[in-house]
Amino acid sequence: MQATIDSQATRMVATATARSSATPTATQTPTPSPTSSIVEVTPCGDPICEVEPLKMAAPASAPTRYSQEEIDGLARLCVVEFRGFAEKRADACVSAVSTILKRMETGEYSDGTVEGTITWGCGPDTIACQFPAYAWNGCMGIQARTCPWNYPSDIIYFRDAVWSFLEGRFPPASPCLGYTYYDSSTISSTDCIIRSSTGQVEGWHN
Image (cartoon, rainbow, N blue to C red; front, side, top):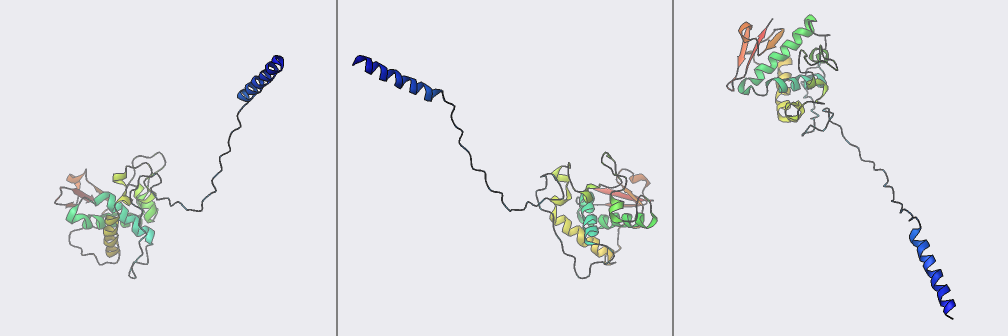
């Protein structure tokens, strides 16, 4: 009788040992099904834009010679260059647009297009460009505070100034029109200067 009990105990211990040493089977995690949602990518590339870029419809009287993309590109250039010019920012903006147009007309630092003029001389490894080309190309690698798409109200303001100028409706009071260059570091040699109450100064020259 004792032998039978000992034999049964031995078999139970062996079974328990075998179970404890067995490799556990991994539980399969269900794979989530793909969603159909679409992710919108902003022109800034990296997630540095705090505000979505605006899709602005042209008014009925918008100039037919220039595309919506060109007008918005010029407006973004003005955001980068002149949003701190307070009461003079529209004058400074249309003066820069005038510089773009003169370069397009004369073929100086320009391929004859708005895009080619804003991005003239810029390449993948180029630091110094004729204009801040990211106003056209997007803001990948640019600090968020300098990205024009982060200032939607300024884009609207400057877009309206650009339209008015291209349509000939901008009052020619103080803008510096018809110059090939503008630069805040060469004020002493400029032919036309725009100053604002904020202390911002820009000079235009040929």
